Image 1 (cartoon, rainbow, N blue to C red):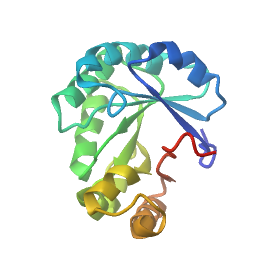
Image 2 (image 1 turned 60 degrees about the horizontal axis):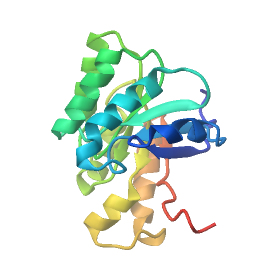
Image 3 (image 1 turned 45 degrees about the horizontal axis):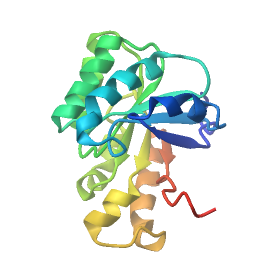
Length: 194
């Protein structure tokens, strides 16, 4: 998909596979099945089993799966399930990326199996923000950095509002521009606010 065509991103919980088709039909440019925050710990395995077939189907909007952090056992299980499924399309969203090395490790595992999924790295910690420029250039497989403003605002002890997070947003945009990749802003999470 050409740069600039990713105008909207819709998340759907991985534990609600009955909503996947509805999400795909909603008109978003990208639909992401979430295995991380939207899934309770005791439902991770079932959500993973539902999300992998979603990723491997190629029709409709661009498909993503947000796996769990690579610093967790669930994240490693998610990545291994993706590798075993060998998708030929789709993207993986990696949460709480703190260093370029995390992306290089994922890239190496996917490359070892000849897999082509692109990556989106979520920058949502102070450490990740500090390393954003290096993360943005970690691998050619990286399509975008996404601003995780909710988690970052909690870590910084500031409201999740535009002004307190302006420096973080600016730093992320700068890192993406230098690396020639896309920047995706924090999702709007107040769904009742039209």
